[in-house]
Image (cartoon, rainbow, N blue to C red; front, top):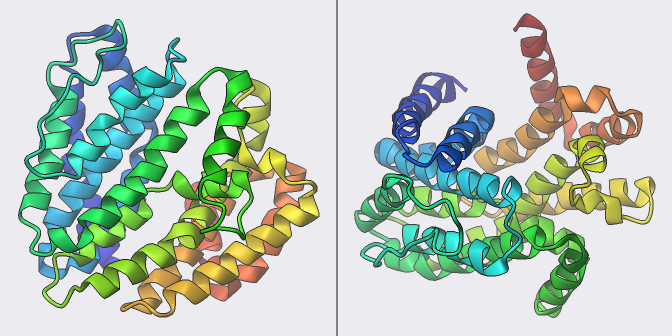
Length: 341
């Protein structure tokens, strides 16, 4: 906990201040607005993700530099897809080329904005991509993680394309896409598979570990199979759980809406908690990964949005019990902190 307080959070805020300064100089007003908004509203994404930087041991600063830049790309693109008038899958695909190039040192960069009117970001997105590339170019075990990084990024980018198109096309596209992986992930519904694809935690875990000398391809496979689907699914489903009210009001897609009943949804969440707990128990630093799972429960279920939704409150109580004492500890800590602010 002290390392998070004294090392992770100050580093993240330092890097984000630099990116925010660069974002404030973007010539195009719409791109500038979305870049700044994505940093201001989603800083906690970088702070949470950067905890994985500690797994890089002496190279924790480099790992955190990558995590902050990569998460900032992800949050910025999410804003561009969510908050724009574009519903063009080609546009979303072009924007997300930056994700693959960020994960590929030496890759040529493209014009990510070629299918939209707003073009001039003053090199902001390119700069984020180059930062990721520079960090990965110096990772000793990059070749062992590259295929898995690209696989996880592929899931993520496909999801972002399918879920931002015209409303009437979203569900058919998501169902058809998840059906491609049905043999591999037969335990998941289309909406659960989609949720699992939306997290960046597996990528952060892989990059952080790959700085260590003892890293192996076997460990890369173990991390992928632990994080996708279970840890990533738990992460994003909790996010959707607490956003139900505002998504209903705004007419936004929410994967929790597709469970047949609240009871079934709660049972599936408990299944994700059990599976995430079991799957990370085989990893090195198993206690670290267990605490991440429990922190996810505490952080999301202590959010102010939970109090405003009686049905979510009921689910939250059952899930905290499933998460055990550490989850309850994180929940209490967050609730106390929110009263002190």
